[in-house]
Length: 118
Image (tube, rainbow, N blue to C red):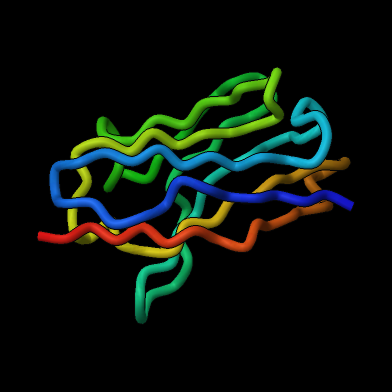
């Protein structure tokens, strides 16, 4: 069973930075894709950033140039560095991992709250 544990959320003023971490149980090499998603109040969950096993990355347009996703293989962790935060970045952030043929299996963390005050 795969477990994902997020950390690093909190309250920050607009323009500030936070770094989220997602620690996986076991090696992250087995995952085809890992990513960060978020759900703001009253909205659907949306993709924020993803990174593949080959270290290709993709970002939502709203966070490009401000957020950076990275893998720390030795720590079995995927991180999301968030800079120049805006109030509209306020959401619960979730880590997701995908593995198996045709990305058949997906796993989610419990989420971590990020609140950006204006």
